[in-house]
Length: 267
Image: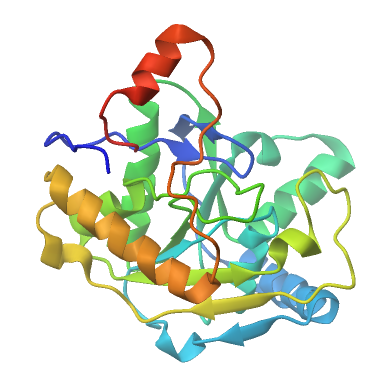
C-alpha cells in the first residue's frame, strides 16, 4: 500500500478509454430526453443483453448516492443507468456532445439519454472542477456513477481503487452503493464496433456504505481506508481476480518509472 498525503487530492477524471484531466462544463439534469431515452434504451438493452439485476431494493431512492463500480466495457455506462431504480449521471468527454450533422445529433441525444454529463479536456484545476460538478449534483440530491479503477480493465482483473470516489463521498456524506458488473466485457469487448447478441450481463448492487466513519476528506488515511472498503465490496459483488496494482500504462522513460515507484496517492 502506498503512503498517503494529508493534503486534499485533486482526483483525475477518467473517460471510458483513458485516464485524463478534464474541464467541466455545465451539467445536464435528468429531463424529458433522459426519461424517453432511458425507456427506449432500457427496453433495447433488456432485449439484447437480458440483464440479470440483483439488489435494486438496496439502492436509496432519494437523496445523494454515489454508484462505485468495476469497469470492464464501454457499455458499463449503459448497464448501470438501465439497471438502477433511479436516474444516474456520469462524466463523459465533451466531444461526444459536440458533433455536427445527423450523426452528431444522434450521438448527443444518446449520451443525454443515458445521463451523461459533458466535460472538456483541460489541465491543472480542471480535474478538481469536474469533481466539483459531481459534488453539485450530489448536493442537489442526485446520483452519480464513478469507476474507482480509473480506466477499463483489459484483462478482467479488478485493479486497486483510486481515491477520487472516496474523497467525494467523504466530503459530501453521500452513501456509496458498490456495483459489480459481470459479462459486460464479453458483451462488448474493447475495440468492438457492435455488441454481441449472445452474451448475458449481470448487474449487482450492494448495500450502501457510509465511508464517513473513516474520518475527514482531508485525511489521506481516511481516503485510503474508504477506497479499500469500497473496492472490497465491489470485489465481493463481481468475483474478479484481484490485480493488486493500479491500472495504469507502463511508465515511459526513467523519470516516469521513478515517479511511479515513489510513494504517492493515486487520485
